[in-house]
Image 1: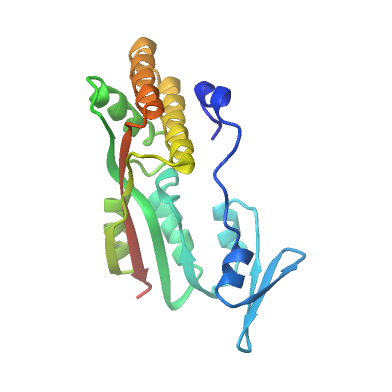
Image 2: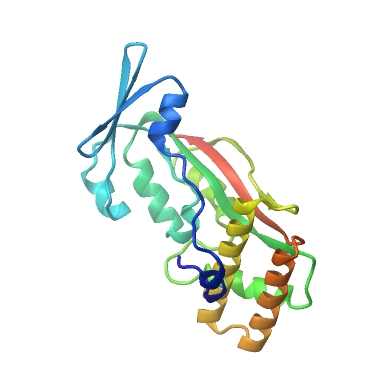
Amino acid sequence: RPLSPRSRTRRTRLLPTFSFAEWARAAGWTAEPTPDGFRIERHGRSVSLTYVTSDLFEAMTVLPKAIDLVVAHAVLDVLPLRRAVDALLSRLTDDGLFYAPITFDGRTAFRPSHPDDDAVLGAYHETMRGGDRAGPNTGSDLLSTLWELGAPVVAAGGSDWVVHPPHDDEARIFLDRILGFVEESVGESAAVDRATLDGWLDARHDALAGDELAYVAHNLDVLAELD
């Protein structure tokens, strides 16, 4: 998503990325690019990665039933949950694994507290229910959805985002982006009047500038195995 208007005036760089090739080399693999991805090798073993940009549901109709592990990282809450999980499980091999790290599960908090927290954050969570999106309780809903679709949960636990002062540059940029998400989502929904939203945002940006802002988002990491 784009930065908020406030963000555009103050931030000019994005969070640094740590590429897959860098990770592989740090772990002792050789990594060479291919026309559509990477090939890594170590101790006589090789893994080829192919990058595909596609609609999830279209991709699941053409991929073979030969996937050993699906990783759905911080994405299921913006998809129709049951349909997405069913599609991903359909490509797993017998006893294949489904891993959904950082799946949002219904709580966002900022500190110091603000009188309009309930109104603004309640509206923010409601925007997650729009269209076909799974909604703010995706993490909890995923536990039963996987069971119903024949992939019992092997392990699950909290994977919260907790950002607190003092902030380094990356934390400040991250928090600025989160505030931008809230501004964009709630502003477009018109569930909170603009004056209330602007007052809340101003207080949050002031706290960020003063190195006082704390942020918590409750997420779940969920691992399941196809039965």
